Image 1 (tube, rainbow, N blue to C red):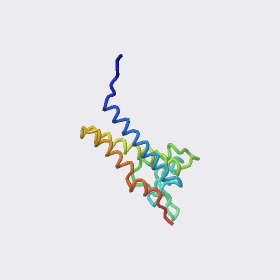
Image 2: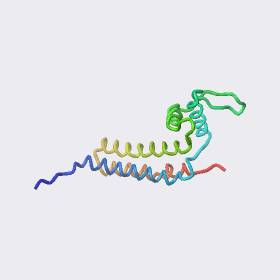
Image 3: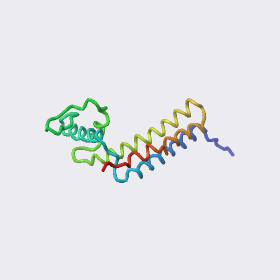
Image 4: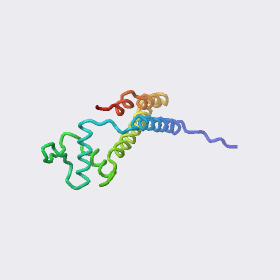
Length: 145
């Protein structure tokens, strides 16, 4: 009878992936009421809305005129507009994009530490530290009153 050995590299990536999924779940629970928002968040949402309407990456100034977004990276509002559509829920799409990007960051952190350090334990610990980071899990739940 042949016993197939499990490749430790494959197993460690599966564990790191499981930790990334758990981290995504934790962030999903932390943002039940929506992602944390501040002035840059409103610029991203406004830019996404205007981008999907065909106005470009602009935000509406309080005086009524449009200003091009130059102080914020453009990829997030473009992706937000693309995945939301014209009548989409920008807040929920932003929440899910944040969860996906966070889970990807947890996985990449663990994978890079594992590949560079050649230590399964360090890769797993590195991804676990990022997944349960206090800042990542509490910042999105803060509200401005």
